[in-house]
Amino acid sequence: MNPHSGAIMTTRAKRPRRVSSGGVRTALRLLGPKLNRIRAASEGQEPSEADFLIQSLVDPDPILRRAAAWSLGERREARARPWLEAMISDPTPEARSIAAEALGRIGRPESRLPLETALADESPRVREQAAWALWAIGDPKAVPALLPALADPDPSVRWSAATAIGRFGTAEGSDGLRRALNDPHDRVRREAILGLGRSPDASVAGIVRPFLQDPARRVRIAAAVVLGRLKDREAVAPLLELLARPESWVRPAVLVALGRIGDPAAVAAVVRECSHPASWVRVSALHALGNLDATEASDTARRLVADPAWSVRGAAAECLGRIGNPTDLALLHATLEDPHPWPRRGALYAIGRLGLSEAAPRVREETRHPEAEVRLAAVWALGRLRDDGAKESLVQVLKSANPVEGDPSPPIAVGDGAVAIRSDAEGRLFDTTVQALGRILPSNTDPAVVGALVEALARVDDTELDRPARLPVWETGPDRNVPSLRQLFDAALPGLLEEDETGC
Image 1 (cartoon, rainbow, N blue to C red):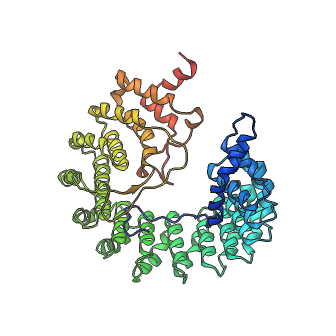
Image 2 (tube, rainbow, N blue to C red; image 1 turned 180 degrees about the horizontal axis):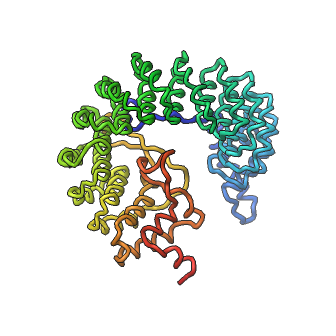
Image 3 (cartoon, rainbow, N blue to C red; image 1 turned 45 degrees about the vertical axis):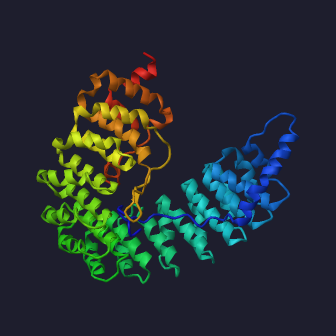
């Protein structure tokens, strides 16, 4: 985890290294003159750049073919799929590898069979990219073809295959992942453990527990992550033993696991970690205290609201939302003046969760903060507070927010104190604002609110209405029933969708 990060450490599958090279980037520059020649010969018919790139997939120059395939993958150009599938048989392994990567980026299930064929390619790089592409496409039917790749002589291929199989959580895949636990390469063992953690098999915890003692750090971290997700009470003692070691980089995963398991026996050890010299360990300890509902440790969180590290201050303020009480109003109000957005974000969360309605006027001001994560937290807090006075502020946010597609990602704060947060908060703002207006019950009689909701609905594609709502990270998770965007609109203005669909 980034030492300056204010986010909980997570372990997620990483895609293999990109196969593009300096030669491909040089080729992309060379494509410009060729496009001009094609345009000149097109007798006034202006070809699109995508059309031009698709034509280049069959160019005699292998570097240009690779460059075109790479660019089409970056664009996720679905029209190029048949040509890229044919390119899986290209005479050069570099082109076959980039074609497999591009098909994974495009993500169409029709590409599964050509990619399964590529798993037997003579080039290990092609086999690796084919496994990754099957992971990206996400079709469980690929598991039988991926299983033999767990025995591939190249560890990168085995790693990619384990990552892909682990995504699907099938019984057939779990058998293969159990065998992969004995792989000599630690990355393969790590992905096998993470994949087994997605399996419904109740015996997984007992299988994973011994890997808390694995010699490889990344494997121990993966084991802690999985045991935390499984809420395995029998893992508390070995996790506490692991916490007693002087390893800073394993501690965050152990602390998060202890918080998720929720055993009060871990509270004392977690409180001690709040004094660890590494800021990222203190952050994880505070998140664990919040998940443990350790109200007896609230004084520890209050002390750390003044920590020198802004990531710790943010985590401490957020923790008070779980284990604090209304007497923390003045402290949280003061934290809203912190120069860094991360503590302000945490304080807004705590104000909303604790129901401190006295702070609502100050929270409304934060809906105009330049940092999207702060605005998101303010909008969420106003909804939790059911602040009728916030309708004007929320309408302004909704008018400027846009619904977006794609998977949400957790926020990550970075830097040495400067305002720098990488997140998709802008994408979550739209859904969260609709949710907040739905929580402020009198809003459905306000013409300004009705008008803003109708206009917002008109900007949403029909296919997006039934997706899970994109809300702040504390509203989502494996233990939460996340509503759909349709349900949020229904709550904000009952009957709006029915009227819109009938044209009445």
